Image (cartoon, rainbow, N blue to C red):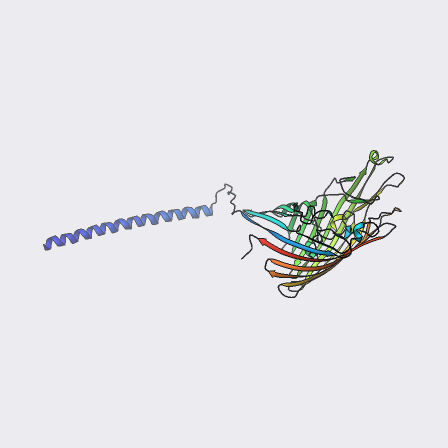
Length: 434
């Protein structure tokens, strides 16, 4: 019996030893394979493949959102457009019936807007596409209903590697140097362009753009026109902006050069010969913002030039003056202009702010003896508002604005309006944090 038990113990010991030896052998084999693989990885890192690397992309990202803006306003002096006041188009006393349409109440939602944004990175190149619409296509018409829902493209562009291709704010305009107003028309315009922005460092940038041209002018028959009639555009407008950003604001120097050209055919007008003329338009701007305490500060703009046209906010289509007709000396001249803007933004609390601003535009007269009633010579704007953030994404505001227009060659006419505007603004964004 003792012999049998000892034999069993010996067998168990032999089996255990064999199993341990087998496990140890397998473990050594696995360690050897891992060391071999590690050597291969080191070799690849030291001697990378000469084949080009594949373009790896990150995940596609997108966001969407918009703004619901409800405006209710009261015009004291004259009836203005539902979407917003345009100083260059105020009805003139003694000429326009709307100048006598006093004490007019209106409301609208056409300044509401929606946007969609998509982005994707390809190695070191970030790309972005952005589209924004509002519903103001018919809102500038005096006869349009304030609840017009006809969409209008505000922005539509693609950005990549410093380039922007599409429609957005003019390069010449400094959008950070306008008064924060509830009025929907004031503060910049947009057009199609190709633009390149170079960052010298985190403080200094240079933007250069070729933008959609348009020869806009006022005629001696008191009509405003653009390329649809006698205007021609053969080369893009060229604009640039040098901006220096610092801790408490920025300053910017902008410039634009453009070619204005018209061709009035003899067969259409009854002239003795075709009238063709071109002028060089240009503009320069010095603008900026300076914060005094936290986000409270002031803004300024000094813009001027000849034939600057739509690049200065109050000029409308008045970049040049075209004069022609039977028995009239034909002429086409670029109009000289100066524009001054000043404003301030005061934050009383993190939720309550007050904004005030003023703008003055002076336009030189062309050399003519004709009387053109609609030729603007001076425009003024004054804004004062208070805005309260009732929620992180919602605001209410009340604004009083006064606009004045002086127009007419030989005979002077005036137009003015005082508007009291209240607005409710609700912003929604899929990327907003809860």
